[in-house]
Amino acid sequence: MKKLGYYLLFFVVLVAIFWVLLSQFTPWFNQSAISKRSTVKPFVFINQDSASFTNADMLGKVCVVEYFFTTCAGICPKMNKNMKEIYEQFKDESNFLIVSHTCQPEIDSIPLLKAYAEKMQANTNKWAFVTGSKDSLYKMARFSYGLDDPKNAVENIADDFIHTQFFALVDKSGNVRGGVYDGLKKDEIEQLKKDIKQLLHEKNPTKIFNGVFSN
Image 1 (cartoon, helix red, strand yellow):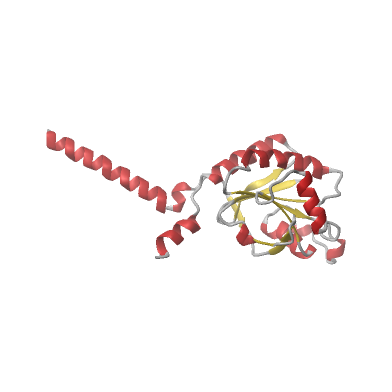
Image 2 (cartoon, rainbow, N blue to C red):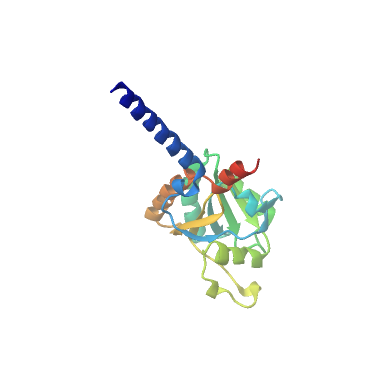
């Protein structure tokens, strides 16, 4: 009887060890049910401090992405009021970042982006404001983040204009997850917050694999 008790204890310990190892080294074990839509394509932009900002700066972080312009008097102030609410909730998370792209790079200079960041009282390590060539910015919006229909593109980029209230969510591995979130609707902002929380608790498969096989 005593021996049976030892066997049972040994079995329980063995199962517990197996469960811990499975959770640490099996990426799918820690994945939430939030669907994957696409993967962030490589890019090089410039942030509000005139520093390079690339897709590599997003890796390892859960990112919320938007497009806006500093002189917008319509939907942008409402969007960014809601974005500020998200920022305040998650700004202390080490693996969280907001990336706001200008959709008017011909007007939104780096000093204007910096001034806007200051107006939003944003820690730019947690909320980056980026610019680049209009063509590159718009391709990312349409073909990486899915924030605008690719069919809206016009032949002459100078005549093209994206004005969208939607936010995208990117996981730590650079995958665009969930749907597009309407930045003007409270219920969708609340859903976005829930999804951010889930992704923050996911393991990063890239880091796991690097840790296992880098030796």
